[in-house]
Structure formats: C-alpha cells, structure tokens
Image (cartoon, rainbow, N blue to C red; front, side):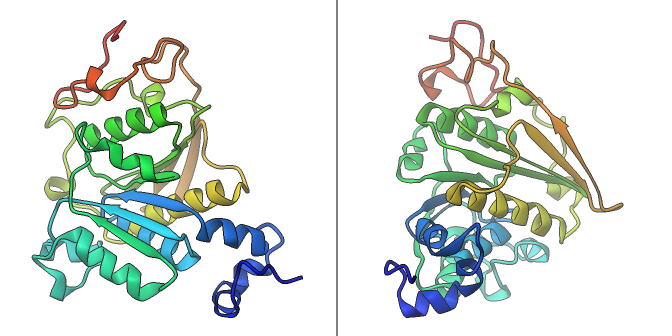
Length: 272
C-alpha cells in the first residue's frame, strides 16, 4: 500500500529507501519530517550534509562562520573553486539545494557559542563536524541540557573517530572530562590531514544521524569508533556514563553559563 505522505516524485527519488523493510515509506516520511543541524561546513560537514540531503532529511541547518579558502578544497567537497572567499554556510547551502529540492536549507553564518547556542532548539539531531575542542564541549553540554542527540566526529592525519551521544547515555565528558591546553594537540593546518579521511568519518556521522531519525540499528552509543586510514583497521572501545559527570551525572549543570569555554572547559564540583 502506498503511503500518501510521499508523492510520486518522492516515491521515485527515495525508491531504494522505500523498498527497504527497515526504512520503507514510514521511515522516509520520518526523514522528510526531521531537522538536523550540522555544525561545521568543512571536511566532516561536507559529506554529512550531502548524504543527509540526498537521503531526504527535510530541514538541514548549516552553522559556520568561516569562509572558503583554497586549501580547504582538498577535502571539503561541498565547496568548489568558485566558492573561494564565500561564507562556507552559504556555499554549502547552495550545493545542498542543488542536490535535493525537498530539503529546506537554513544557513547560519555564525559560530555556535554560549550566546548563540539557542539555535539548537530548532533541531532534532546535532552533527558535530567542528574542528576544535571548545565547540565539542559546548555542543555536548548544550545538547544534553536540551535532551538532543549529538553525533560526534574528529580527524587527525590518517586517523578518525566517531561516537553518538544520546540523552540517556554517556556524554562526551564521560570520555574526556576536560579539553587539552591550547597548542597541546596540533590542528590540520599544522600537521595536515589525508583528504579522503573526513569523507569516511563524515559519512559515518551521516549514517548515525539517519539511524537515530528512523530508529533503526545500533548507534555508537557508549562506543568510540577509531578508524585508521593507513591500515584500514577499526577498533571500537566501550565507555560508560560517569555518575559524577558534571553534565550528565546526578548533579549536573543547569546552564552552559556555568562553564568557561575559553579555558580547558573543565567544570568544577558543585557548579550551580
């Protein structure tokens, strides 16, 4: 029986989803009704945005305050040579619109910080495609306070990692209580990164987001996936919720205002 919430064009476009027993018309309708915020339109955000758009996620937010540089193009495939100098959010939004007219694209030319974190309120899932620890902690903390899942990814030279943080599972701080000091971990500009690596990790992030939206499969909750592009080996390391975690523990913070995200993001005991 045809689900009348999908028109003839959509049934054609998403036919390979519709015929899947674990997705079907109902799952595709759920995707079209969903909203995902991708924070970062760089290496990780590029494949995540394109696959989420192609899959038919009905509303995609893109948050990034940076502009496209020529050195980005080796890995940030949502942008092209003509986009150099343009805002990344605007460039990525244009690509997504061309991919799928079903998707309402919402570019936000802003950095997600304590003063702009209310942007998360309008979305169902957050994809953390950022490139710095401060943003990762902020997204973890703000999403946990709002009961939103976050799909995390990170890359370094030949190595990548991914995990999924859901409201009733362990959070990013259960893994890493505080950020390294500035300069302790080199960034991509200093050490470089294999251009194809963010394509792999960003695709994993898109996969995790889709699984959450259609409630299928086993997301990487309480599991940190490590990927080594040099050997094509993977390792999954389990981790548990820390009952003393200052965010998801029994006495967690009530607002991100309690945290200094310019420092090591550490939350002292009794932050209220």
